[in-house]
Image (cartoon, rainbow, N blue to C red):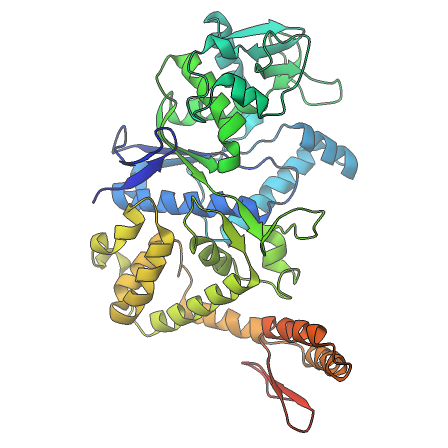
Length: 461
């Protein structure tokens, strides 16, 4: 089997050849822990969890290292802690724990290492000192900055010359900079803010240096795959490449760069101002999207319906369709004989779409056929995608719980809908029908003007 991946560094699809097949190494940029992760953050979580699972399938569970960092020092963290009247440590611990719980709920494996920025200050200082010594960085006014013109091929990843990158970015103008495009490696820390002693005074790291330090510590100077959202290509990933290459003298930092596309909600950019900003936690535990909460596995399947490189539109309809698919697949799985998974058949021939740049929508198309023609192979492939991890009986029980609605709440909504119909407010009537459908309630409008309802675990009233 040959895995082919689109490499953002070369702009082409290539056969994947790890540096060491006994130690395949993957790094993905993780969260800045000042608030709950939103559904856009779930996309790289799920995408690169599938990549991790696929690599483990191809090279062996013990031969893949996956590092996903946690950024726990940042201006946003400082501001949020002050706003809430808690310590920075309390905020970062609580938020990191919430992120890990959300990741587990959407079926993501725990990474091999989940390093925190504040635990790698020594590595950051070591890289900065290397960059100064080699003429790629300079100290000025308590800051240390990377000297972008010192790297002739700066812009290698984003494929744009330095002057264009500067023109298209929000560049901080500061008197201590030699060049407009120079970026901060180290900066002074306010007395009340977290800070560490350094040769340039008490301060804290810039954002970009953190990932260079953590990837170096846990994966080495050059590793196999670096992943993240497309929004990170510039400046974050570009600056990671510059720091790491110039510090260690290699032609590249990671051999393959993978980036997932943007996410929008019901056809619009997600933003708090539009009222469509949704966290993973909200989707799992509240009725803020589609009038109900959703199982983590539904979120995962809905995300995999779109190729990771393409933009995705996050809709209630997609979640409903994903849930129906899982209901069907779990029902089929419940009818299969129990057996030792280690004795399972080879999945090699069935994984062809995944081997073609992790083409999950094509893989899901094949899965529909496999669950009809060869259910055991279908179950095995689904598990490589991180699906069908539950026992069918447990999924069915939770589904019954989800559909077990409060009769009084349903009757109130039906009465509101009848009033809307009487007022010929068809838009409101349709909206209330959708709310009830999301609760798992099927309506029947009778000829006598009444409405009855039914759900999987209740009788009509």
